[in-house]
Amino acid sequence: MYYAFVFICAIASVCPMRVDDRLGPYKTAEECYIRGAELIRDITVLTPVVQASANCSPKSPKELFENDPKKKEETKEKFEKELNT
Image (cartoon, rainbow, N blue to C red; front, side, top):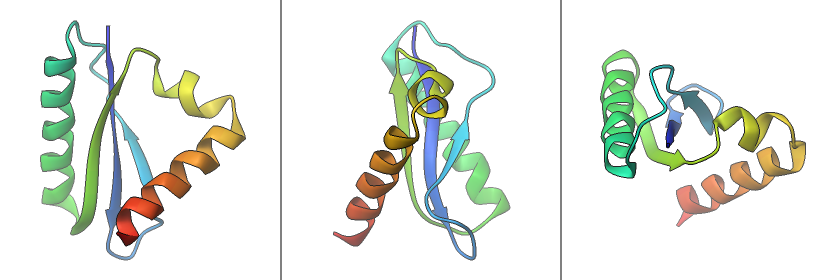
């Protein structure tokens, strides 16, 4: 099972921002990434997005990020590094 979430950087907002999917988990990684793409599409309708990244994990976003502040910071640093390259 895979959980979908996206990181976005939108104009005039805190970057990066994580958006978790509320419909999953998904049986395959392919289904998960398709859902991630749908999330990005839906977000871009609402706000101008500078960069977005769909992500899938066998662990829920809560397990990945909520319990460990260090992981939150590492993910933010990785995203910012990708944004600046």
